[in-house]
Length: 477
Ligand code: 6PG
Image 1 (cartoon, rainbow, N blue to C red):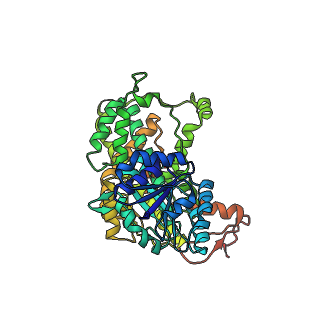
Image 2 (cartoon, rainbow, N blue to C red):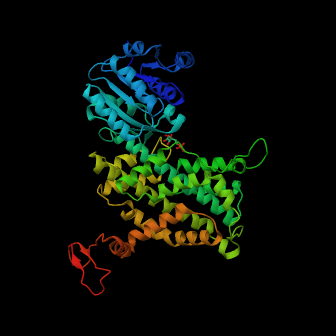
């Protein structure tokens, strides 16, 4: 019998995806640039299902039933283009190439266009959940033509994570929509990680708690509305003790956060679309700041408070305040990310169901959380919601959290503990609420130095004031 689906690129993610497919009873053709990996996979995991190992691209393609379904799990960028170029001459009309890597959505759009002109289907597919998710059930975000999803969907839904019996996989939208949504997922992942890290820092420096105590606090929080995979692994990391030194693991790790770039792409994309994703932006910038060792060394003795700790009445309830600030800031960060998806959909003409996106993020992916149930419900109540903040249930949560949130941001500033994620989220919240913004002054400045004109609140039209000629009336432009 021929293989139902093929996986090319057998590093950890590809290998685990192939094993997941085989474990679900699908015959999987497997292929890798160097044949040793293919051999290893077939040798080590044949008890899990049926693999058809192939040494060459031609052999791989011949092993597949038609229309062929080929999943590529190779590094994003030039490597992906190279593999596509290798397969294309061997394929027939209607065959489907699925790029399961972390491609930039604009590359996906380009590839989809080029391949559709050749009569091939191309599906850019976001896959989240790391190695473990790929094996046991990831969250899957496929884009590309709807017809391709019709042929592919059942297989993908079979291997995806399930929540309440529903697969964490849905057709996101045409061409690059799947990779776009995966990119924003990663941006949100950065923001969520940053907020948890700030909560840790505030508990540690503001209350003088040690990592083990903070791990306990996080474990408690994880039993409530903050229940999430990232919260859970954060307490694991914090309670881990370094075997070499006997010190808390977090104290022996260099405090310079790295990144492979998807968070940066999210912010770059948001800048292009004009969507204020300040939470994700602060998260990306905080990672870069942490990595500027020379800058930090040069500045480390600048004046400021440090080492001050809350005591007595001030300390009481502060941990709970941080929980509230974390929840509120998280709502803001997610609201911003969903707005970016909305804006991307409008720009690139995708019809994306935001409720469905929230729903497939409930399981399998890195940002999976109880909180995603709330977001799903919010978009089910109103698919056109302008921002998650105004949904009735989030409005209520923000109302309950805001006093604590303000206290935390104020205390962070007083104690000299940087909390950019918490602060920017609160500033965003207050800016959206504000009756008037100082943007009016900025318009005045622009008109003053560059005659850039302004609009008025009391009548329509475009105006310019003759600033140099005092007393002269403004003119309409
Ligand atoms: C996931 C993850 C994964 C991602 C890294 C990126 O959804 O499974 O988002 O796709 O590649 O976690 O991490 P860095 O940019 O922090 O290296």
